[in-house]
Every structure is written in structure tokens, then in C-alpha cells.
Image (tube, rainbow, N blue to C red; front, side, top):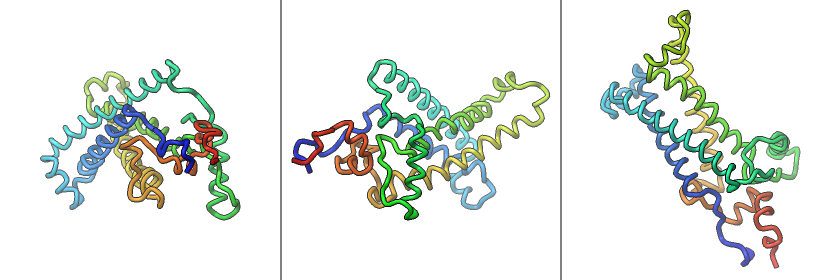
Length: 239
């Protein structure tokens, strides 16, 4: 390794890691309490209900975790706005989390590489197309699960927002939106996010970036070569 370079690169700061930890903890609590409440007739769900102190207590814990997650999401949005507004975060092609046409080309090239039609992998910046899909899926989920969850948590207040002709069916629709989208989110996190970030061979059994916020220079050079060139440039060349 080039001696001019540090051993690790700071990928995420303390605030970003704290936001992620809150999201992770509330997601797990919501998943376990929500599963028990959604499928109470399943034998394996009964011990989950008892674990949380019964259905009523599980419902209270579920609501508290949901509101905490929404507050964390709002905090993140305000934080990103602050970082961009103060210039502490720059909008660059190689570092932005905003989807770009290049991401579609990267995905096509990556699939071609996986199936043997291409001999070279695409060059990624700070975020790959998978990272961006992973990130923006949270916004989709918060819009559907978060809003429907708020309506179900505060039904009296929410009822003023709905026309009288929708009373007979709106609550059933909200429940389906909330529970089924939550189930989709659980499956997505388990099979997409956990695999890509933790279970792939070079990360297994877990990437420590979500705790330390750091990535090794070698991993950065291999996984995010465009960001590596942007940050280190000629300093990264071996001498």
C-alpha cells in the first residue's frame, strides 16, 4: 500500500451513524412487534406476543418505535438540507446519492459482468446504483408505512382528513397499506440490504462501516474507484 495514504477513509460521520443505528433499532422492534400483531394466529407468533407483554403492550411499543423512526427520518432530511445549504456537502457526480443516468448504465454493465458478457466491472463512485436504490426505498417506505401508521395510531384526528363517503373502506385500505408494505420492507432488508452490505464474501460476517464509519483504503479503491480518484488523485499512485 502507498505509505502516503491513511489505512482507512472516514465514510460516515457520527451523526450519520447515529441516525442509522436509530433506524436499525426501531426497524427491528417494529418488525418483531408488527409480525406478532399481524399474524397472531400463527403458533410461532404467540411467544412473540407474550415476549412483549401481551398484545396491548406490543401495540404500544410498536407505536413508540414507529414515531421514533419517523422523527429520525425527519431529522435526517433536515440534516441533509443543512449539510447542502451550508456547503458542507457538495453535489458531485461521483459522490451524490441522487440517481443519475450513469446508474442505469452501471446496472446493465454489472449484470453483463455477472453473466459473463462483459470482462470489466463498472466504475462506481461513493454510492453504487444498489446503494441509491436502498437509500431512496426508505423515502418510499416512510411515505406509505409512516403516514398510514400515523393515521392508524391517531384515528380520531385522522378521520377529519377523510371524506365521509370513504369511512366504510378507508381504514381497511390503510391497514393493508401499512402491514403489507411493512412485510415487503422486511423481506427487502433481509435479502437485499443485509446481503449487499454484510453477507457478501468480502464483508462477511458483517461490515463494520455502520459502527466505525470507516472503510479501508484498499476496499475503497476496489469498491469505489471514482471516489478514490477524487479524494486522493495522484497521491494514490504507488511510487
